[in-house]
Amino acid sequence: MASLLMEILNELKGFEGSEHFAIPVNIKKVPDYLTIISKPMDLQQIRKNVANNKYELRQQFLSDLTQIIINSSTYNGPNHPITEAARKMVQYATKKLEENDSRLIELEKQINPLLDDDDIVGFSYILLQIVQECKNLPKSVAFHSRVDSKKFPFYNDKIQRPMDLGKIEQNAKEHRYTTIEGFRKDFEQIVENSRLFNGPQSVFTLKAEEILATCNQLLEKSGEPLAELEFNIQKVLKFRVLPILTEEDSNSSQNWQTINRTKEDVPQLNRIEEEEISSSKKELLSQPKFYVGDDEEEGGEREEVIKEENEIVNLDLSDSDDDEEISEKKIRLE
Image (tube, rainbow, N blue to C red):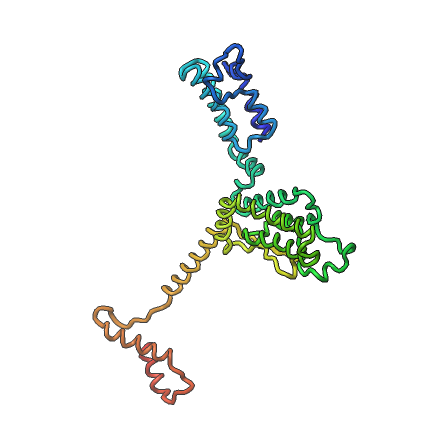
């Protein structure tokens, strides 16, 4: 993203009139500028923003370029040559961004996974940020990784379902969480394990409770986007079999099996179902119908023959003693 934006900025240098926007306005020469313009902007500042990766979206880059037009229009007037130069400069930048649209979309998704078409990517991205915030808590290192069974040989005898922030982080990276509550329960498991092994008043348990409280605060802070993403994920679960964690394999990544049916599969599934229904209809329509005589003149006879045909089909021949009657009906149909 940054390299492409830098290329555009370098090309803008060659535009006539761009020198007016190359650096910040000199307040000594234009002392009233800041009294009129509340948000100064120039190409030098935009270049610094690009270098510091402050632009996650192309729209943010364009917004700062557009601010140059707004400032010039406000201070110099909308029809001033300097304003017109700014307008042409921004029009060119917009055109260059449109030419690289597909490339920029992919770059934006890499920078901000919330833009990904697959909702579980954005969902997991937010969860990973929460885990990182919890890992940044002072003196939380005891819960960053799994308890060392060599140092605490009886830990696994007492704790049936070990859990740590490293494990939660790995689960989020592998998109194993599809609900907010599933994520929260693993944090609660950390607290439960510490209470059971260390005691409810232990400094470790108190720290585990602090981690859980931080998790809940961050979940609440991101509640709206998380709820929307979770809702979308649940809608497509019928078409995607996601990893499911069981008690037995909660500590073994090798036991996970994932069968992905992406949202792109949905139209394909619908088409297959429609084809099956259509095929069934054709099969029913293609079944032979027996009519005797003209439909209009001998309708009664046709109904009688169909009735007799059904009698033959439904008759249990193994229990019948009247073979002559059955043969007679078959002959009449022929």
